[in-house]
Image 1: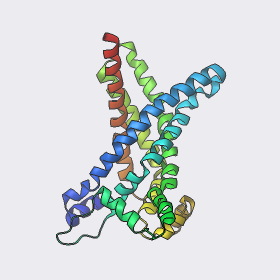
Image 2: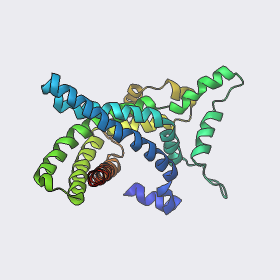
Image 3: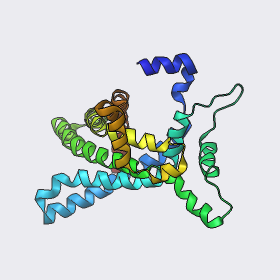
Image 4: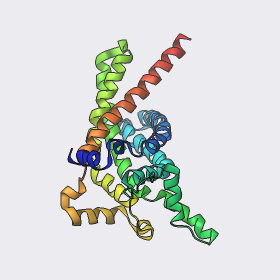
Length: 264
C-alpha cells in the first residue's frame, strides 16, 4: 500500500496502468498458446499414462502445464520484456511522452546496434533477455498451479455432478484457480524478482552474461530473505484473481461452445 500511495502521489493515478497495452498484447497470444496447449498435452499424457503407467496419471497436469508454459514464454518473451521495461521507465521530462511498446523494443535493439550485419543478427537475442529467468519462474509456477488446481477443480465439479451449468463451472474454476494461483505465486516470488532484475538491467553486456542463479545470489547478499520475496504481497494479490479469472472464463467458453455443438 505504501508503494501504491507513493506512485499515485508522485506520478499520478494513471501510472498504475503503465504498460497496459503491452500487457494486453502479451495476454492474448500467451493465453491463446498456453491454455489450449495445456489441454492438448494433458489429454495426451493422461491417455498414455492411463494405458501404460496408471501411477503416473496424477502427474499429467504438472508436466502438461510445464510444457505449455515453456512454449508460451519463449514465443512471447519480447513482449514481456517490453512490458517490464515500460513499467520500470522513470526518465520523465516535461512534455515528453513515455515510449510505447514498439518504441521500447526498438530502443533495446538500437542500444545494441552494430555496423556489422552478423553482429546485428546476433544482437536480436537481446529481445529474449531474461527468458531463462522467466522460464525458471513460470515453469515451476505452472507446475505448482496446475497440480494444485486440477484436484480442487475436479472435486468441486464432482459436488455439482452432471447438473452443472455456467454458474457452477465459473465458480468451481475461479475458486480452484484463485487458490492455486496464490500458492504458486508465493512459492515462485524469488524467481519473479530475479526475472524483473534481469529485464530492467541497463548494462546490456552485463545483462547478457547474467544468470538466474547469479541474480538470486545477489538478491540474497543485498537483502537476505526479504530481498528474495520483495513484492510478494502484490504478486500474490494479482496472481490469485488473475488465474481464477482466466481459467474460469476459458472453461465457460469451452462449455458454451460444447453445448452449442451438442444442440446443433
